[in-house]
Image (cartoon, rainbow, N blue to C red; front, side, top):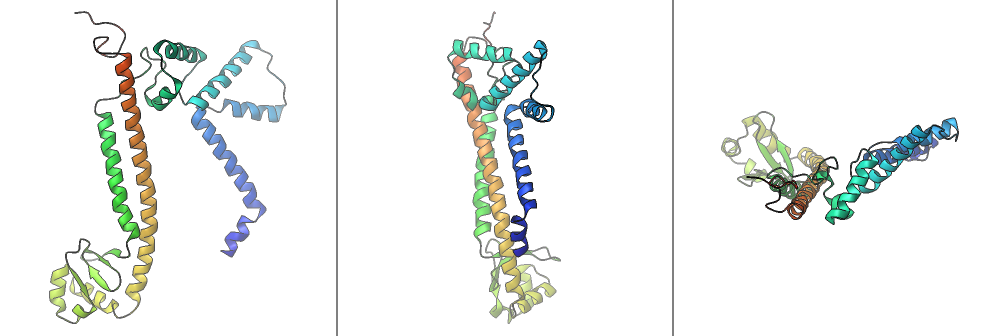
Length: 275
């Protein structure tokens, strides 16, 4: 702890934190804007001075690139040119669709398509709801492991799983159990009950008499708690991602149903069918 505190207070840590913070900011900008032209432009001005571009074509390209990055950074909608932005703005006004709704379904917004709002695959919503529910159930299971006071262990030779609190050894699903008192009885019968071999049964019974088993249980329970916390965070992330994806797809289907009602383009287009 003293060495860690010394490192945190050192000038090296301060420099590393500034660099790391800068990289995180640039990464966040890149993730949202889709490019880092603006950042590179700032770097160019820092190195080469504030001399402006004189060529009108290049200047126009730089300004358009900056506008596109700003649009994508704010709205998270993918566009390639300002023509796409103008097309999307005109489509929104014509269709009566707000930007907030498009942001919710941005996964299904394709400005290059004539329909703009793409059709989610069949069973997409249902499958992601199932994955989200499975992740939620996983969270419940992992939480039991993280909060458990029993250590879950496996024998090396027999491969039998068991759990113990250093006082009682039990089957993972409570099918059988024994303690030090039962070790005084016939150990062969005990081995047949648990599935342990003779040496494993003797090792467990002997471990009851000293602190070896208790130390192993304490260490394993701590490891299980940290593993459970990490697993819960991952499961929560997976659940949220799937639930949001299902919600966005459902909203896209609702919007398409309003924009392209039955009888107007069976595939969602604005072209009427001809028989």
